[in-house]
Amino acid sequence: MARIYFASTGVILLSMAIILSSCEQSIDPIIGEDRPFTLWGYLDAHADIQRVRVFSIEDRLGVDRSGPVDAVVSSKNLTTGEEYKWVNREIVYRDSSVGHVFEAEFRAEYEHSYRLSVRRSDGEESSAEVTIPPPVEVELIDERDRVIVPVHIHGKPPRLVDVTVTYDAITLPPANPWPPGSTTPPAVLLPVEVSYSGKEEPLENGWRYEINLRDDFALVQEEFELSCLSPDHIALRRIYFRFLAADAQWAPPNDSFDPDLLIEPGTFSNVENGYGFFGGGYTVTTSWIPTGAILGNIGYRTAGPCSFGPQNIPDCQLPPEPCLDRDG
Image (cartoon, rainbow, N blue to C red; front, side):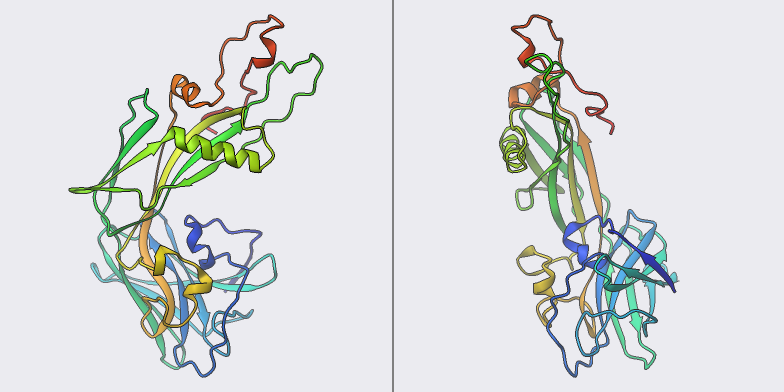
């Protein structure tokens, strides 16, 4: 067993952060519980290493201890028969709590079914079965001069989860501040995430979204104001459209993976003889950069030629490199 010390763990899906990195464990006690394990995780078709967090159910549900855990984790591809043994990685979080995360090196295949089994030494077992959704293609209908950008998703996995548009926004301070000699404030990168979950329109074989750049810019400005940054000097590096294509199991109450809610026995679980959730899916991301004309029309600051007349200097904005490196 390897022990890994994490300052933080990057998990693709924020709503599933409890799988690996939750430090808070507001868990109700479970006395006399005969189910052996709680499981949290999902098979990721875009990852080379699969992970699941395993909690032993003892006096309290979801409390881990340092040291060996009485669990053997394995998985089987029910489509091909291929089997994998998973390795325990003990993780110590910043608050000194411990998590047991089991890993296996393989890539889950589209439309294949898998069974994950977690067995205790006395033979008691918790398990879950999932099917990876089919692949999708994302088509961005970018007409370059529109503030409403249609996005088509071709292919129809059972569920789309956490559909978000992220605006990689940054303050763009004047290259020549006024009055002369004034200190130029630093550029501050503040990505702003806007949820588009539930805003899809069904197609015959997929979904359609309409990204409203102008309405979203108002939300970007609001976030900058809340962060004590000027809402009048915002530039945009890139736009990211992201979602998780998920299996049919991914259906918690109110579409929310709230650990305080889901940890309650009987609330939601697809784990046989256990608690928690184990799903299947993959994250899809596409990005683009609107033209300078459309950005200026919306209200973003854009780079342009700068005259040296004093009357123009206060409004002259030049990109402070490398802050507007659009590949950054």
